[in-house]
Amino acid sequence: MFSLGSVTPIGSLAPLNLPVDLAPAKRDTDDVNWASNTTLDNGSDFYVANRGDNTIVRMRQDGTVVATRSVHVNGSPLHRDDSLNGIATSPDGSKIYVTFTNPSPAALHGILELPAFP
Image (cartoon, rainbow, N blue to C red):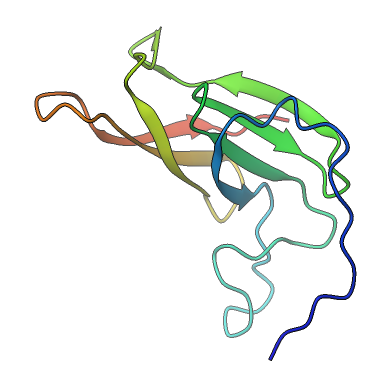
């Protein structure tokens, strides 16, 4: 059983626009039998995938925004009906993987490999 010790709300919600997923900027890879691919390393920032405006926000654990990036495909921003769906990071922290979808059956859907950002 888990219990919540305390809750600290994030002061500014401005960079969050329909957040759907998050991933550690630096994964804990010390012990594969204990940590999963979603476990934050000590003091790690994390990335938030925003479905509302198709951006990725890098935040500190205290809620401070480090940076925000728009997601582009072939040099163009995702289309209005495209939506970020999920996010993950590579074990070495150098890449971000995002999935995106579109309600149209003929639309482009996929997984993107993006460079991590500070």
